[in-house]
Image 1 (cartoon, rainbow, N blue to C red):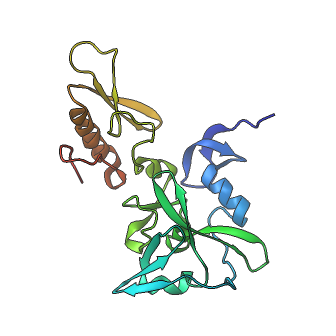
Image 2: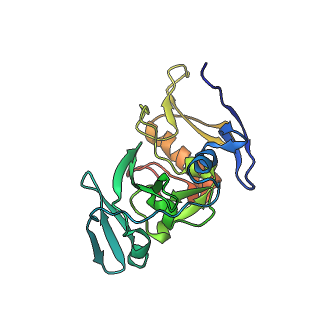
Image 3: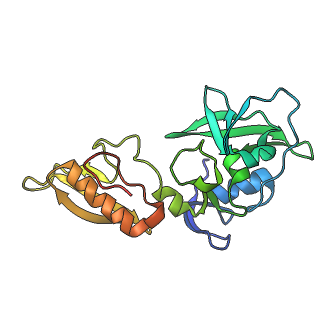
Length: 227
């Protein structure tokens, strides 16, 4: 029988509510516990014995060549933290991440994300401020909660309006058929009905900036407001 997971609060201090809780931990902390034996710390990996991929230094940044023709960008000062491994690219939803599989000091195989290595220590989740999973410069990595990480995501793949937080409301009366809404604290907040999807997107963007501050990800486009 398939196991059913419930929502609830993660037992890690400062984590908060999660839509999926297992053994008292949110999904991010549960996976970290299973992989590393600790919810807050990552485990150092032994250096890879095979050939390293190329790393180019351009000014104060370094470009780490991955698989699939992708390149991860880090601060040149951090090369020593990642150059012992052959990192490869993995796609996840809208972006790619730099990942490595290697053995730890006890010979146990581990999977590690580059931004976990370079991000703030002890962070529940390491969030990319610009949404680019391969931009691993320190200035782009920040500690985030599960909710803050969700606020910073792009629009869903099944979005049909072209704008985040906007849907066509064929049930609405009159000419205003485009509905804008936003989620905060696990509740949807209606932002009204609008004549065009661009107007609805602008309402979403304004609400996101007001509610989510630095973690807001407004829509892209010339007719919508930007940070």
